[in-house]
Image (cartoon, rainbow, N blue to C red; front, side, top):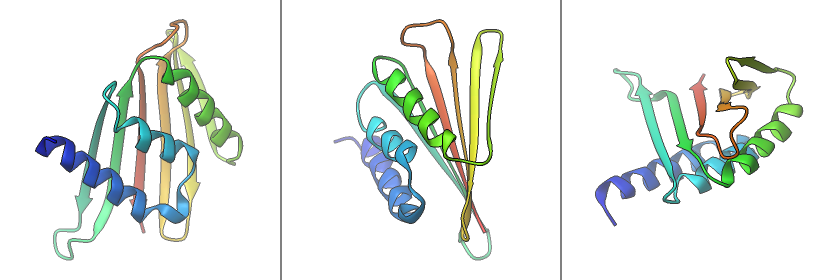
Amino acid sequence: MTMKRLAIIVIVLWTAWAGAAAQNEVDRMVNHLSTIGTASFTSAVERDSKTHKIIKVVNKLVMSGPNVKKLSRTFDSEAAKQKNSYSTKKDNIITKIFTQDYPTSSRIYMIKYADESMFPETEITIIIKKR
């Protein structure tokens, strides 16, 4: 196992543990898809320079293939449960966003993909802002 893969797994596991109480199906699917070879996963953590506490975590998954449709359906299912969800279509690109607020954090979920492709390249971004 390479150091890069190990680092990604540690970040994913830490993110999953930190937000376990707030985890939804989109989080679970992103965590799963980030560990298989057909996806590119990036995570960035912003910390307070004085206390070293986490301020914000940004996770981004880019993928294509047969799991894209399942990810999109899962995203739509979670978005339907939320008060704040939005969808736009511009130049054949669909962007969907929903938010979740919790006592200790706020989460913004965004998925972006081309409408007319069978298995479009899909980008999903999850921003977790700590309070």
